[in-house]
Length: 166
Image 1 (cartoon, rainbow, N blue to C red):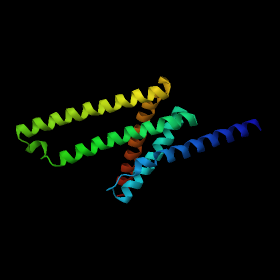
Image 2 (tube, helix red, strand yellow; image 1 turned 180 degrees about the vertical axis):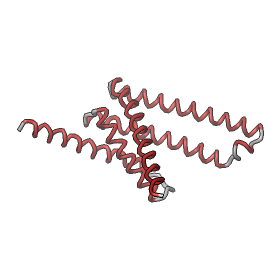
Image 3 (cartoon, one colour; image 1 turned 90 degrees about the vertical axis):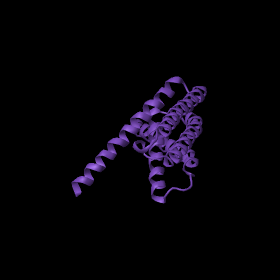
Image 4 (cartoon, one colour; image 1 turned 90 degrees about the horizontal axis):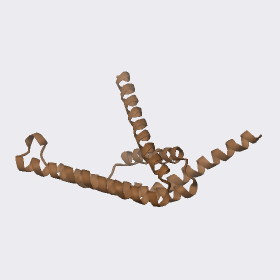
């Protein structure tokens, strides 16, 4: 009987955390200009990411309330940086067709983008250290790597399955 009660408690906690994760992630999906199908795929991936990270870090509901707004703000800044770079690089010719000046400018912009990305990551780290134990912050970084690795493997598997069907 005690095992059933414990299972029920764990299940209830997992459902609560998943619900909170989905609700806290909704602002991250309000980006205009994307196709409906792509937007839906990204929503599913983001929901899975939130659930994976929440479970991996074993976040309490209070920790989740503090983590997700900071993490969503970080993701929005990263997305804006990537969108800005993508827009500018779309205007540039292919690297093999660049003049020396264009290539030098392109390289400087790339370096600036990496520096800005590091700055955004540092800001995330400092903000998280204010609301979570450092051990949990380290778990977040590990959870991100593991989740990305899992997505990569799934993508490889889908590619193999598609090739086998042809």
